[in-house]
Length: 417
Length: 93
Image 1 (cartoon, rainbow over the protein chains, first blue to last red):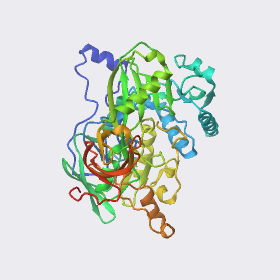
Image 2: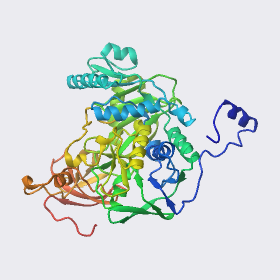
Image 3: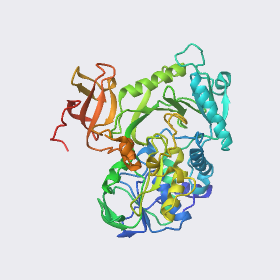
Image 4: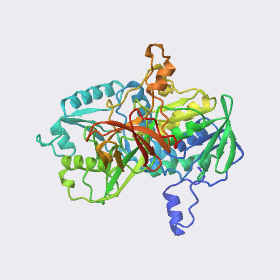
């Protein structure tokens, strides 16, 4: 790494009033031709470029981003990271990502503030209890840490939860994955951008893709707002806009793009040192290092690209939060926003080749893509470089919607992630 | 967040309605003859348009009737509402 961050570089730059830090990544104009182009400069796209350069030795590559890097869902999610999924394929995929998270700050020489504070999923009725216990067993068989907590243990682990039996959705127990946690979302995008840029990847911001040039069944390049760029390999990691890009190539995807909202409160002193999710009542809460409560809601029911979402979703989420945590009743919410999530019918992602040669899609992460960022980038890079999926993402192909071999994580892992 | 003009009840808040997704996906006439690709197309593949979309809504907390809506998904503006069975308006593409 050209400009390695360390305590010494910190001291050195402190002496010059921090005015001489070098730019963390370059700002080049696009070249005429690349070996591969990644469409979408979010965490997944930047990670893909990073691993393509690092593990597959593809250096002449570019990442095109229509806005600024990490400005989409990477900067809009509630930063929850976990791998306690039900099915073997999902467990393999998400735990691969979790293992990469555990060493990511060292790998990137960039503090992504990965904090394994645990993620607890609550059960509110008998079916929840059965499903979550089943998932705990499935996780353990796949080597993923998971424990079942009864109501008293839930209360002990997170004392501010209202475990009274006479609330509308009483807490009957929960599962806990201690290796799970949170990370700083912006840092992930910036760290991967810096690492990729360092290896010669061109990160081109404010460059929107307008068309895909095809010659028969293979791709030849991209029409962009900065002109035509030639390439034989295009990896699309455009989240909510995946269908829009697919349409340019004449493809249809099994996706629906919907707003998913989140909100943060005013900052307060440390009160909740873990992540608590409740899928039944659609409320997730953790506390950021700044002290804000970070609250996630469910998706809106309709297709929209507005990055807003409806007020009734926020209202329902906060109702659930207040019932579970009466202590928050006088907290003020500071900000609310929406991200556009691309949801697959089986709530599992697509990391796949397509029937067009040189066109690859990494999409369908729906409400839970952030947690998979390093794993997704690693596996998508493998798929692009070898024109074949890695065994960990083989099940997440586009053809599963034809073969019927779905990885149905709807409800099994969580309604939202 | 927006208002929807239910053709039976008038203008109501969107939270009273439930979205039924893309409209005019025709149920296969002879399901037994369908190939796997055709099933996938019917069951899973969606246009997921950014722009003008034809879609179905159900006034679930009102008259509970289904109807069609033309909405611009890039700004949530509703352009037209028409009943089930009616021909979609032709001035939108």
